[in-house]
Image 1 (cartoon, rainbow, N blue to C red):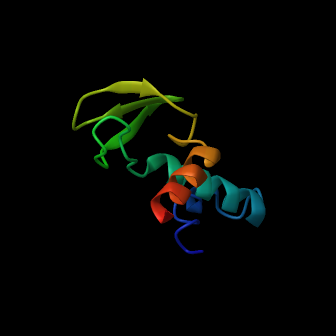
Image 2 (image 1 turned 90 degrees about the vertical axis):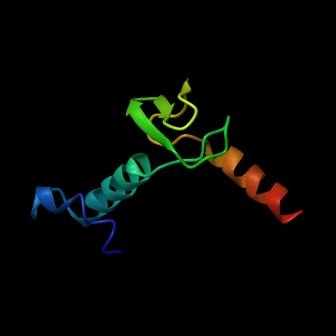
Length: 83
C-alpha cells in the first residue's frame, strides 16, 4: 500500500483515502515502463494521453490513456504464456 500513496502525498489530507488510492494506482501504472509490442523490450513510456513511444526502436504508437494494453489483452497474453 505504501507505494500507492507516493504520488498522492501532495494532496495532504484532502480528497479521502479511496480517491487517493485509485489515483495512486493509475499514476504509478502510467509512469512505469511498458513492453514494446514491436521489439519486445521494456522501454515504452507515455508521451501524452494515449500516445506511447519506445526509446529502443523509436516507434511511436497509440494505446489507452493510462496503460498501454487493455486488460483483455493482458489476460490473453498471460494465458498464452501458461500454455
